[in-house]
Amino acid sequence: MRVLVTGGAGFIGSALVRRLLADDHDVVILDDLSTGFEENLRGVDVPIIHGSVTDPESVSRAASGCRAIVHLAAVGSVPQSIIDPIGIFDINVRGSLEVFEYARREGAHVIFSSSASVFGTNPENPKTSLSWTRPMSPYGSSKLAAESYLLSYAACFGFPALAFRFFNVYGPRQRPDHPYAAAIPRFMGQALLDLPVTIYGDGLQDRDFVSVGLVSSVIAEAVRGTVSSDVPVNMSTGKQTAIIDVAQDIIRLSNSTSRLEMRPAREADIRFSQGSPDDLMTLFPNAVDVSLADGLVETMDWMRTLAEAGDLSPATLR
Ligand SMILES: NC(=O)c1ccc[n+]([C@@H]2O[C@H](COP(=O)([O-])OP(=O)(O)OC[C@H]3O[C@@H](n4cnc5c(N)ncnc54)[C@H](O)[C@@H]3O)[C@@H](O)[C@H]2O)c1
Image (tube, rainbow, N blue to C red):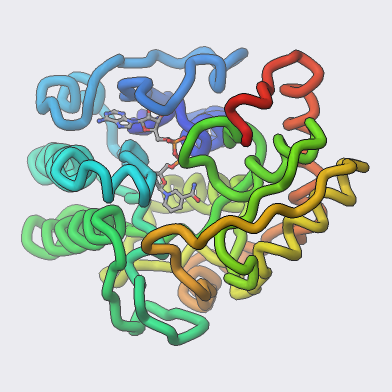
């Protein structure tokens, strides 16, 4: 089947593209390379349309002939969304609507990457598809708006759709060295260079970490079976890990001399984040993730290749 992956040059996209190719799909990517890299696709032979999801012509050209679209392209940063809420709306909401408009016209199956950030201030744990949503950032609001548009489009216009709420995805090819890098790659980059491992807040905030391997294999299965759902589905493990524990594990794993450095909490940082995997397990009974310990070892192996290639710079990791 021909499948479009928007954002296919990014961290999750590049893992997913490899998985879809292994399933013998004919894959095409639409990416503006704003946070993605062609390097992520080294050794992968797929056409990349360089363009934005906000441009209907680029979307139509890329999606032409595709029976499924995995829509990952977005600005994925909470801090960036606080700096530029309208810019984030344009890409994450209006850009998503361009993709959904195509699906509406052509009846394509759409799988969308929403986020646990839609739950925002809701203290309930674990979160389910019935838990109330109240985003704490324009990023979370953009994801809530886009998933809600997708599910309403699917109901009104009759195409199959599936919105996943990704919790904290980690794994190889998640870069450590940009201002909004996620905790795991950043801790790894800092530890490998023996820099202070920087924690925002008291480190007791919990996260539900899910490996990019699980995310890719679940999405590949959803593509294969044209799986749809009229409620958003958590992409989560149901396990909680405190950020400070992950940081200490990473320091141990890398045999680093790094110490922890506590910094003031970030704006709109969610305190506890744990997603019930019940809906995921109902739709995908084989969706069992590797342990976080094993996933960290695999991710660290990749991060070491960056360090050994001299591709980690202290200036971008402090
Ligand atoms: N990584 C996580 O933990 C996580 C958690 C929740 C949700 N998500 C969502 O999953 C998706 C993928 O995230 P990721 O971690 O791989 O991020 P990423 O930044 O590595 O990937 C996003 C990709 O989209 C591309 N892109 C951005 N704006 C675009 C535009 N206007 N047109 C075309 N391409 C564009 C980027 O160049 C990049 O290749 C995003 O929608 C993100 O919001 C990720």
